[in-house]
Image (tube, rainbow, N blue to C red; front, side, top):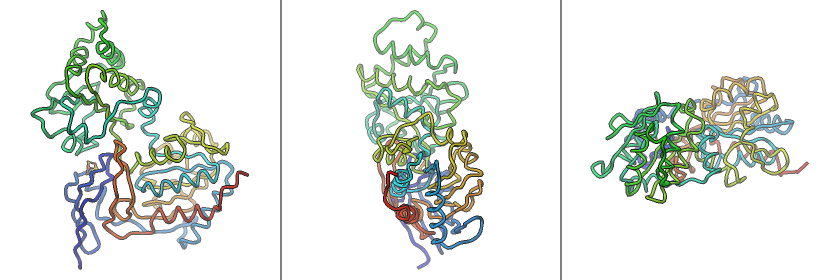
Length: 410
Ligand code: SF4
């Protein structure tokens, strides 16, 4: 048979993790990804990925590469395990176990949304699944984000239905604008953003403020949100919003909490793809912390101010294991890995630009490998493979972990 269709495939092209994709394979290549947006279609591509295994730049056997990876890790004085994109939660769990065994620092792509995660840890967070927002919200406020750019199907899947009974408000903060087709637009100057959110919170709490006159549109928005039966605030948790006020995330968390008095309000944070929300969840199950976990003292310690970026920039790391696609690494992490003893196990590992000593190409979770991934609202979803591929990341990482032996507490 030269044509095969797989239904209910999950796309990891962005954090929406759409699980309604129909993948058609003809003559060993993906020819259709039905329901996928352009970003998702690009993520699936034709399903072809390299299947190389390299040690010191030369082709090698899988056995030799695994041996070399285990050796460089076990000899490291200050190892780092970094969880990159496009691997399943099952492979991520093995990576965390390696970090534990090595007394390593462990970090992941989840750190790209550190501001939102830390704000939620400090204050708690009033949130909901995207399914609940789709069913319940009669007012959706997109705060300085238009999902159509980096989360293309978010609106159609979660806020576009029942538009007649749901109002959409776009808040524009400098160049970060809400959706073009919003029913109402509110413009806030970037320097005023956090003050405006504080004023909105005060209005929700019933205070009458003189300063509120200067923030008339924000005050009107707060009052409109209080009148809603169920309001949702949608904000971007990812780096393109790094130019935003660093206190934005916390101010939004506080506003959403305050609104859960006069009405119901949920804060939804948009996350990028590659199963980074899974890395957050797996690290939290295994260690109690979502990113920047350090096992150096023998037990997991939370070091959010000393994650991979800081440790690499400070020259503290001498060897690293990257589990996941090197193309998804933040630029400064990829740069920091240059010149170190590094093993990469993941999709397109052989294309890593920082010259790893060991590169083992694996399949892509959700295309060649089954398992579990998390949507941006922390809902776990099954991954269905539609094509055979190179060795599975889970199997390779697990074998490296087994080679390292049991934890010794030396
Ligand atoms: S919206 Fe995101 S998850 Fe859905 S098909 Fe597009 S890229 Fe894939």
